[in-house]
Amino acid sequence: MMVRALPILPISDLRTKARELLARVKEEPVVITQRSRPEAVVVDYESYNEMVARLEVLEDTRDALIIERVLATAGEFYSVEEALADYEQSTGVKISPEDLMRGAESV
Image (tube, one colour):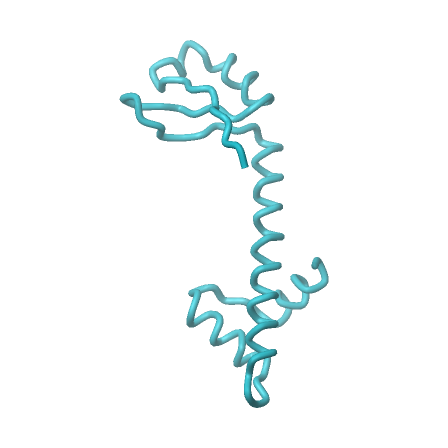
């Protein structure tokens, strides 16, 4: 995977170039720097929502695969509730059986 360089805008230019920034982020993300260090990335609202939606699908898929593996490797009967409790304990993320079913339906 090739990483492309994003355009950079110093934070000091935000006041005078805000409109330019808003137009630019429709094309590609822009890195905001402070004291020559990257501090933030500005993306347009639609791109942000698309990234969040993709991330949610990826997380749901990952969670479903982890739970499937746990259930497949269990030596004895292992309830969904026990699997979800173990998952929560190991990751800190609570998933209900309903969340699991919604995630499985989207895979």
